[in-house]
Image (cartoon, one colour):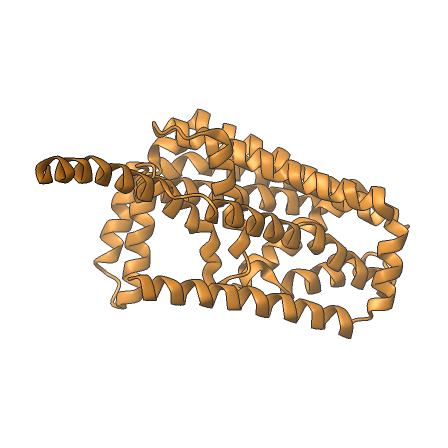
Length: 336
């Protein structure tokens, strides 16, 4: 078990190093001089604002995570739980985004069942996809004839969300698994039904729409930071279009199934910026600066959190050590 865990950690570390190297190669090949010029034009204050916006995003999402944990009847020290949450970002670039579920490993040491932590993860991911999709539809506001589409689409999406907690949906998915011939696909559908069943308490309308509101605020802050970046680089663009470009790029990265959306998110963002009037140098520099202040900033914070957690004993080890003390004392008494 220890050897397999060590191999997994080495594989995850290797994936992180490879992702960083690929990103460095991408920067060098696409013209690092123009990127340095854009980074310099942004200035220290601009960089600090971008990083602060990302930090606000993480804090809001952690607040939602903490809210879900308490809703499921669990309580952890706030600072320690925040470190657990940040540690997940360290492995954002790993295959399958394994870093997102490492929080479950930490929470397990505090008596939080796998089903509860995975239900939290599932609910968080679903709401983030919904929020980013809503922000992506803001692009339609640029089309005068189709402005009403965004309200129709948003209304239908928000009305659909309560169906996720319907027992009928879980039962339908379970029946569907009996008709699927392929074992792998059948397991995926069964796993989805189990997640929906476990997350049912988090999908009650107050928790559902409360979490949705927090997510909307968190990603809107990130979208406004993207708009600020465009303005700083002298690219004038309406706020709703800037947010839509940012959101569409994130969705493209997620749908590509590339860890962290590396490469795909940047490419789509650059192409959309070119489509809406950006010069080639800006279209290359903006995605890189944006990702350095979001994705790679998150990875850095995650690594620091993992380092801090690695320096302290885990609760399970501490408990086992405390349990051994009375045993040793009793053995000493018997020897006497």
